[in-house]
Each structure stands twice: as C-alpha cells, then as structure tokens.
Image (cartoon, rainbow, N blue to C red; front, side):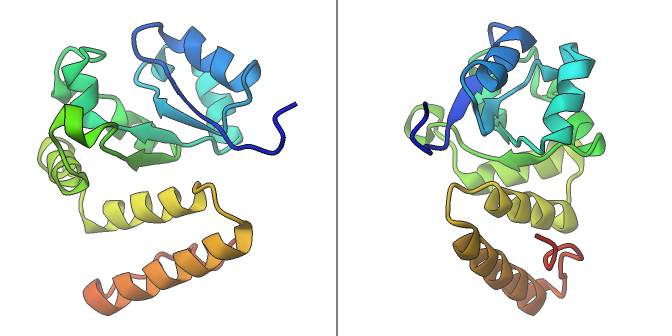
Length: 161
C-alpha cells in the first residue's frame, strides 16, 4: 500500500533496464530518474511511453557517474524523438556543479534542441509534477502564457488534460 504517495525512482543507470522494470512494476514508480539504459528494452520503452512515465534526464550527472560513455552518446534525443516524456534536471546541483540553465545549454549545444523543444520539456515537467491536478493545470497555463508573452510560442497541447 503506497498511501497515495507519488514516487520517483532513480533507475536505468548502472544496473541497466531491468532496474527500470523493477522500479515501475514492483515499486510503482510514477517517474524515473535517469533511465539512460531504457533503450536496451524496447518492450519496456513502449510501456514507459504508453503509460506516459517521464524520464528525468540529468545530462551532467549521467556523464559524471559514467552511466554514459560520452555526453554525445546520451539517449535523450532518441527518447524525445520516440515521443517519450523527457524532462531536463540537475540531479544534485551541489555534487554535479550544474544548474538547470547549464543543462538546457548543454542540450542545445550537444543535441540541437531549441526553444520549442525546451517549451515542451517544461510543459512535460509540469504535467509530471507531483501536484494536485487543478494546481498543475494552473501552473501549465501560467507557464504557457509566459512563454507566449516572452517568446511568442504557445504549446499547442496546453489545453489538453
């Protein structure tokens, strides 16, 4: 019994895709921290996508912990192109010595992500936030309005539940 507590579990780094399977199916994870090795299991990747389970991507941390050989081999672009919910995160700012701004700039430099992609990452992050649904809707609306005001971009799917 989870007492209605949401859970993020860090999985799919050192222990491979099987740790993601365990996190989702045995521990009831609602979000996966990292997930760099999800690509090793196509069926699990489809499950993650079908159930809209987001991956909290931490580029700098994944490189520092050697869960990827090189930042250029990080699977974030592959996951994003497959429609998997991905968000950019810092993991541990103190230990990683990075900021969310640094992570966005790194994603831009290495993978060519742009403003529209960052808009989507931000909206996905809010859709995946552990907040009450009504609060999330308000936050998403506020963010979308700010993005439209500042940059002239409105996520086309903001009105969807």
